[in-house]
Length: 154
Image 1 (tube, rainbow, N blue to C red):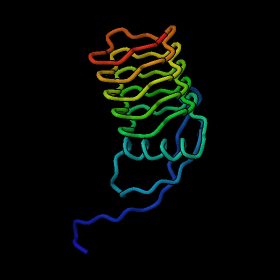
Image 2: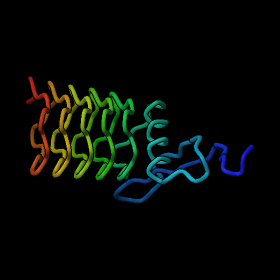
Image 3: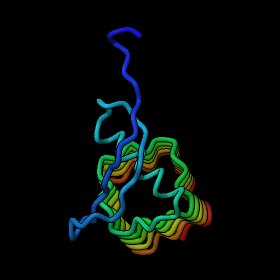
Image 4: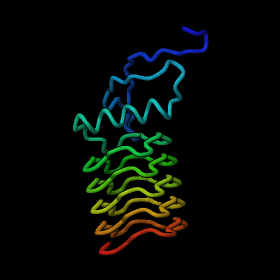
């Protein structure tokens, strides 16, 4: 083995509630020891969604979730500011009241997602599929919607 290779290891990673700072769930992830917090958080969220965890109110800011399957996930009130959700699959996800300010959602599938009261200020939704998404009360000021598909959104 070369001196530059790094072996993956298993570690426990805690995700906390954005309002109380209490541990909301602890995930067991496999990553390299020098993986960034963004990557570790993204792996923990993927683990939680596969486990059926309720991520409502979780602090998920800055997570790397590019290409993640988060369909049907419970993310109401979650803090996803600055998260990379490009090409993520969020069909049918519950994102009511979630803070997605400055999030990168380019090419994401948000079809049938529940975004009532979600805060999407400055979010990049270019090329995102928002068909049949529920957007009542969503805050879209300065959101970038070029090429977004909004058919049937209400």
